[in-house]
Length: 106
Image 1 (cartoon, rainbow, N blue to C red):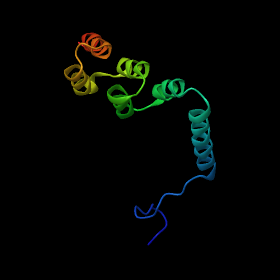
Image 2: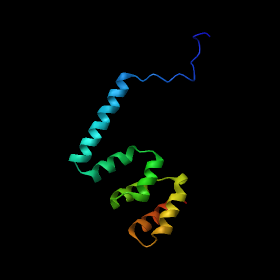
Image 3: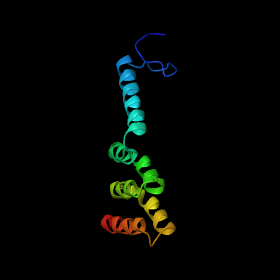
Image 4: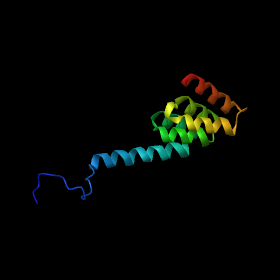
């Protein structure tokens, strides 16, 4: 076998600098969670989160402000999640925010 091609069964090598960077980021995140304001930390992380995590935050975040921010960040592919929220709590502040977001999308 020649060395010209990558072996798909071989585990990709991790750059040690990337590993240290992620360990530092994780350590900073945990430190902020325990010593800082968890709501502020969640708001910061929400801006960098992927669509799946934003949907989870919109559905289940403990802080209403985090839920509202997550709802505002959701896009068209998340229509089913928004509809679930409206069905579950139509008259609440969250439900009203979801209705506004749905109207904005249409």
